[in-house]
Each structure stands twice: as structure tokens, then as C-alpha cells.
Length: 146
Ligand SMILES: [Zn+2]
Image 1 (cartoon, helix red, strand yellow):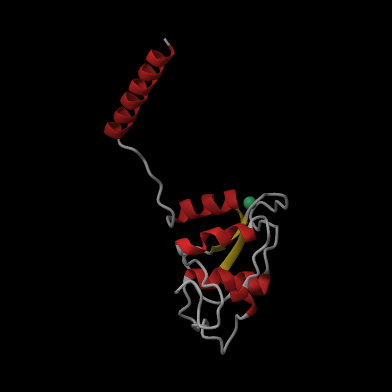
Image 2 (cartoon, helix red, strand yellow):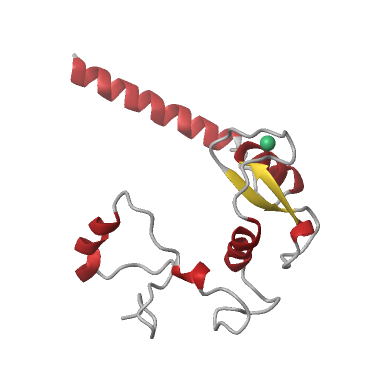
């Protein structure tokens, strides 16, 4: 049973075994208690000093600085999603100044610009394939209708 640790706490991000799937319904619409946040800090086995994973760092940001609904780029305050974004050229470190609080659209734009999110440009060949498959799809559906 790896989805719970020795203390019986839920292991974050672990898949539930099929035998437990029926129990997930219990959490439907409810806010899960974030056990890992409550136990964060030095002395905790989860604490890995400066060599924290990106996920651990984002958690650290959330615990220490919350989830402010404000974008440091466009100053919007009513977007649905805000993220902690790593400043371009800086490392994932436990430093507030290494991060920016951005709305989702500014975050995407920022990441594309500094190359940390690859942009996919389909080649001419791929475009042609897509066009053909769309044509076939349309033809098939027309036949069904007729
Ligand atoms: Zn923004």
C-alpha cells in the first residue's frame, strides 16, 4: 500500500488502488485536507533543503506566500487562474524574488518567450495530412447523413 505512508497519510500524487476507487466519491465536491502542507517545514522528512523538486517549490511558495489573485505583469485581479512562474534565467530556489505571480495567460506568454515551453509548429507535410484527414472525416459524416 504505497498510496498511504507509514503515518497513514495520503501520499500526494499517487494513484489510488482500484480497491479504493469507490471511496474517492467521498471527496467529491469537498476540499481535501492538505496534509502535506500542514507537515511542511524543516525537520519534516519531506523537507529536502535546496534540492527540492519543482513541485515541492511550488508548494513552498503556496504555503509561504499563498495564492494571491494578482498578476505582476498585467495587474489583473479577476482571472480564473494565477500561477507562480520562475523568472527567466533563474534557478528553482527557495527565494520569493526568483518567482513572479502571473495570471495564466501572462504565464504562458512569458514561458513561450523565454523558451521553457516549446511551441509546436507543424510542418507543411503535417498540415497537409491534417487537411486530408479532415476532408475524409467530413465526407464520411456526409454519407451518414445522406
Ligand atoms: Zn497577467
